Length: 168
Image 1 (cartoon, rainbow, N blue to C red):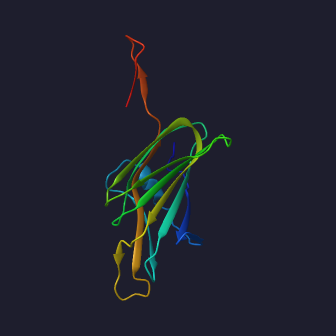
Image 2 (image 1 turned 135 degrees about the vertical axis):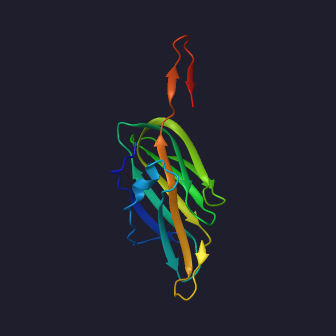
């Protein structure tokens, strides 16, 4: 599963068109630390309101079986979340799930078939800015961020007294 050495890939799109933008991933490992007071965020300031999306592509250890992607967004405006899990077996179709956040600290949880995946992509899409800054040429500020990201599997334990398998 992702470790602190993971270097994600980012891409930014404005009105559906990808733009060249350097996105700092320095503190991205904060999303894996399990702490409630840390996060990773990125902001973009624009001259006019428009649809903005940030794609985060997280590589996965090729020996890990994944069945669940959970997280908490760090944002002030509604965010559409698209999760795409890309199988290691290229003959399989990607798993795609969506959710809309309503406010800051909104969590998401996606269950997918247990399998080996190469990447998990999160697309965070906004149609309205988080805030409008005064006295600037680019007043419309879109904030993207994650407080938490967990890419893992369900845990199953076999009871010693029976063949019942339990999972959380």
